[in-house]
Image (tube, rainbow, N blue to C red; front, top):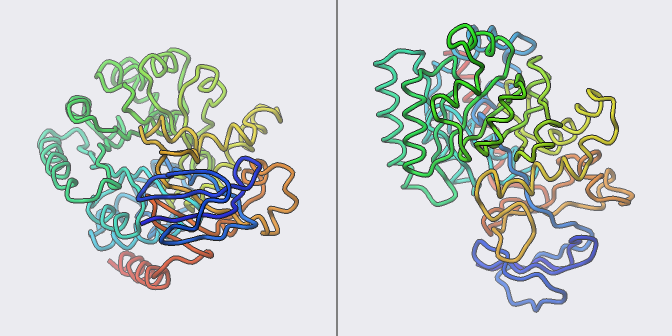
Amino acid sequence: MSILIKNALLNGSRSDILIRANRIDRIDNNLTKDADEIIQADGMAILPSFANAHTHAAMTLMRGYADDMVLQEWLENYIWPLEAKLTQKDVYWGSKLACLEMIKSGTTLFNDMYWHFHGTARAAEEMGMRAFISGVLIDQFDKEKSDEMIKQNKQLFNESKEYSDRIIFSLGPHAIYTVSEKSLSWVAEFARENELLVHLHVSETKDEVDQCLENHNMRPVEYLDKIGILGPNLLSIHSIWLNNNEIRLLKENDVKLIHTPISNMKLGSGIFPIEKMLDRNLTVGIGTDGCSSNNNLDMLEEIKFASMLHKIHFRDTTIMSAEDTYKLATYNTKKLFNLNMGEIKEGYLADLILLDLNNESMIPNYNLISNIVYSAGKDCVDTTICDGKILMRNGKVEGEEEIKQKAREAAEDLIKR
């Protein structure tokens, strides 16, 4: 399969981009029309697609279900009891809805942590997306539960190989307040042996830090360092309540940080110390979190909030410029996930979007990146391509009406249960 994109705006000038199989094969002017499909991209900009670096995809079914609550009350009294009723079918349709929402807003890769692994994996596979999908570990410090979850994750790791190489297994221990040291130590070892990413909530709230100090006489990152889980394969989600020593440990171990500004604001968790991370050249990505704590999966909205939050927090208009913020959701994908993507370059994976420059929010176009970060909405995304395949054209995704209806039915049935 080959796709020729003609006359798209790339780095300020018009270019043709030839995609062969799943890679960007050639970028030039006036390429011949020798391709299976030709996209006339006059009036459009070509850009790398977004990577949503932290999701709980199937929580689309819980959008608006329990808002405006303290994190622990929200989790323990509402979310966890509802999640106990989830079936794989629920997760499948919830994840399909999530994939639809992400495709329509220009995201082709998501990093997910949720129950019923195969429900999410099947949804992402069928929708054509690229996904790192975690086998979840929550043992609540019960040895038998720990043994059970370790066995389950080993099995899921083997079963994950039945999917295409777009579906990548990772390990998802939830947090230090829900996962035992035994399980966390196993995660560290198994991930190293099998070259897996580890997806872990870290220091999301002050209560988490206080509890760790009480239980271990050390802060969360120091505790994780003691266990041996810190490393370049760890994606540390939220990472708000950190001191300078913890940031030093993260840097020394090349840990990757994931910023989730809207979820953290909505849950009142605190503000990610972005300036300290970037000053130390730590790799930072951006994620939306799940739809029960955001409440959407729109990375265009997320990057705008990421920039605005820190400007008001520091009362400094120069911090988190449009260019800096945009790179966190695109360029940094290569370092976060060890994949050749995040830029429009020959040899890179063909994960990209076409943005409609004739959309009212993109006029005038003094600075494309500023327009993307501060002005663009998901209706600006005309075309989404992942792994060299067109997932959306002219703002439409095949089968989207069925997905919306089935997800609506699944949500209604879940609440009844």
